Image (cartoon, rainbow, N blue to C red; front, top):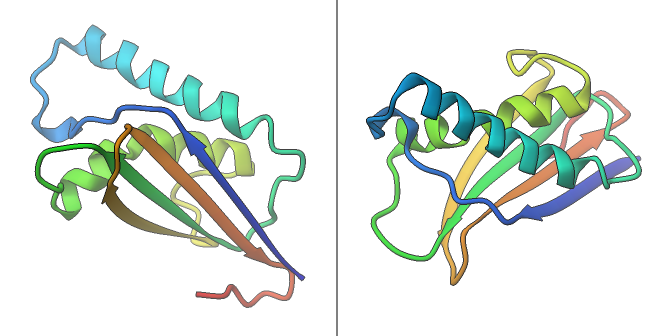
Length: 123
């Protein structure tokens, strides 16, 4: 049986590798981002099982799209919190992380998690 969960989190992400900020300001920003993602994920009644595929999609209203490494850096706090919610480390090989971005009117992060209990994760 395939389980698919999708949530949208109202969160503005920044390209962490390019932000020049004090280490304490960075720690506060990461804590806020993880808190926002955790609050929304904790409302989901059923946590998907691993192995799974997790899509992290950054949504922003303007500017250029981020390149691949900056996109991953911008989504690091969200990835860490999703992994905590799934009950494993974000480096766990049973989780395949997929990144995307789109333009929209409002800032946000979309988290989609697709798991398959039959050891074969759909793409």
